[in-house]
Amino acid sequence: MLTNKTIKFSNCLKLTAVSGILAAVSLPAQAEQWRGWNIHPPSYPNSVALESFSEEVAEKTEGRIEPKVYHNGVLGAQPDAIEQTRSGALDFANFNMGPMGPIVPATNILSLPFIFNSTEDMYRIMDGEIGGRFAEALAEKNLVALSWFGSGARSLYNTDHPVKTPDDVDGLKFRVMNNDLYVQMIDELGGNATPMAYSEVYQSLKTGVIDGAENNYPSYESSGHYEVAKYYSLTEHLVLPECLCVAKSTWDEMSEEDQGIVRKAAENAAQEQRKLWEERAQKSRELVLESGVEINEVDDKAAFQEKMKPIYDDFVEENPQLETLVKDIQAAQE
Image (cartoon, rainbow, N blue to C red):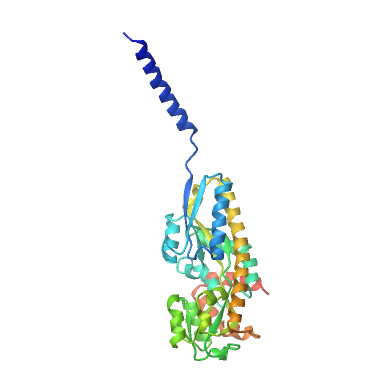
């Protein structure tokens, strides 16, 4: 025989079960946590822009996607991070196109010396149809390029004398990034290219192991290289774009609405990064000038460009399928 107490207890259990079901139904969907790779420190223009990207995505998706940026390369070196993003182990990243060549051969075009006449030309071209072709090449390797960041123009700097003509490079030892195209560039100018780790450059300049290196204003200043290499010559031989990329597996899992939000946030981040970069570059230029650095204009860049012809000939011979893309970039700047 059921007592009133038994009936009340039974009803209580039923209410508890129903309440649990209703609570489960009304719980919001769990946010998608994104991991993002970045090699720069938090205060760097790229880093600030990536944080803005993350905040905008989280806000506009109403918390459905919550990106988190890991700065200072703590999730690995760039080659490792590229592979992690391709596999979906990382969700997004800011990659320089220099080390992308071994994976996406078309991006080696962007490392050809003097392929872009200026930073402005690079932005215009990469934001247009030609940039879309590079994005397609990246997508084939499971990287969705949403927008293009800048990293300024790289120029030569050295310890002994200004570089105003190709002859001024003759016999000098210049540190370059570990890329055959950069080694060829210095060789064609009559210098001796020396690939080495960036962390070793300052001491090598100081002790005379190398005579010079090449980089943009912020890197030249923040590394302290300007303290020992007092001649900065505006060859502007390399204008390398960077991408804000999302893993294709992550991209494919998103709704069309969220894809639109993420792409727009990436485009906004690119505009912010470019503005911050120019401000940082100008500040670095002023700092090195105040320290006594001699900044030299290069009046005849055509003389340097002419020296690069064998590099272009070899590149096209080895990559005939990329010849049209090289010519289209050049034609877009005529």
